Image (cartoon, rainbow, N blue to C red; front, top):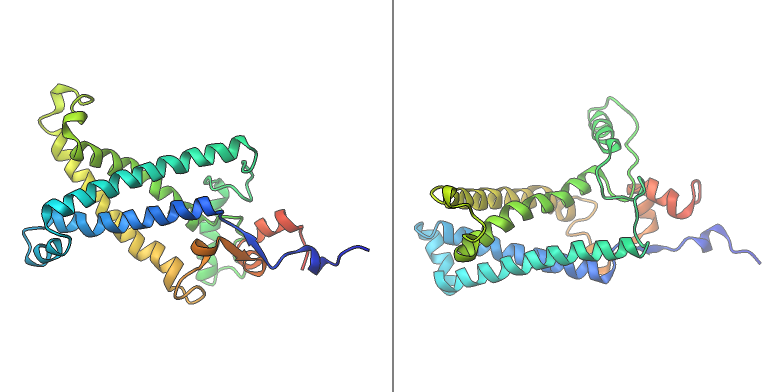
Length: 241
């Protein structure tokens, strides 16, 4: 006896396994620790920041927390890349335009289509795969930030070790550059997370007060069909209800 279409399609599917969810928790916890301690240390001469640093046990303790959180975030990032490589070699992930996180020309077209829809110039929304252009931008921003903030932060945290890799002719100005890159990119990251990621994953009416995906790793098939129709077609076949 064959199953009906409704029996073949589950109500929920796993979008992120437990390893990905743990990586995400480590990433956002260390990010918050870095943001809270880093900007307090940078503006320690301001009265409010002076009070805030005392909450963390003083400048010395806050500095230690900042460095430990930074190294932990970098290790988490490295583990994430290694884990992706393992999944790829095992054939559990691959390159397919409907499911890849890699930016494609279609994403540029989706941006234009989405703006046309918002402005009333088109009646059709773009059809997203597993990751929309906004989610891809959100994801790859971490890679950009990790190289800028991570490398400059390591140099500032461990200056003696960093001097082994810095040409002697640029030591007169490289430290000021590291400090500028570290603090300005950190400000950009905080603003980005606050206004982009926090809105999309917490404040949107459809997910408020938050999307529980980061906790459960599960997404309903109905939500997938609505938000990621190309992925739905790949996983369950076009036209299934």
